Length: 362
Image (cartoon, rainbow, N blue to C red; front, side):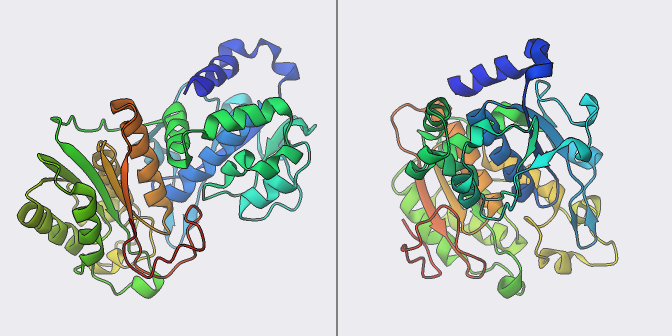
């Protein structure tokens, strides 16, 4: 985190006396709906700003998804941008100021590796294309030597030397803080589990079958006692079933954020659609405000994390738990397990030759 601390000091407003000669990078985020995508898009741009030594500029976007529209007030209620990060409108900038890398395509790592002199591009105000995965990690690949200077390659190596999750967790905490503080734990072995069913083929999945999550929990918790499991899920039946399993089969305590049907209405869902239908939407996590309540609870875990692939929400959980773990322990590995409920594309961070087979993987 020393790299990010130095970057923050060098690029905060009080140090921008040389503003006329500075180069800037745009980072767009949106929330509370689709927050996994919205936050990762920002973190990827932030990572590239650090590596290319550009001053970060934030824009909050209105991401429309069906009948849900995010607005700044709704986002600010759950996620706070740190004061050192300048906002586009406060700098008197608009969309017309920004130059984008031509031909940007997803996934972003391919474009990164195809852009010669990435850290020397002449545009004063530079924007990147959409990046919803761990795309900026492309700068740490061996192939990046052909597109970065020696100084930029060194910054990339330092940023990602602790792995993907820790890098993105550190980036998150450097730029944001959750509006609600995480709960204080008592020293028990703590594990976060995020069960994400997504839409499409799983829209009719009510979440009662927790066999995959249970298999992961047995591996991760093992003989550790006392233990507490932080449960985060997009199905009410999953919450209920997992809580019962954790308490009766594992003998662990549970920590679950309170969620009600009213959370869906607050999140901007169409009030004519009922609670059951809202649960089946291809939403980020179910009700958007409840996602941040869940996230606050889950990311207080420090010993283990169980996540769903592919899911940017799960990627965010893993990143924040990895960061919490790094602050709590030195030299002790974070215990991990992945589950999949099928459907969707391959995850960005699991090797394509790893057979998930619709179940749990150690």
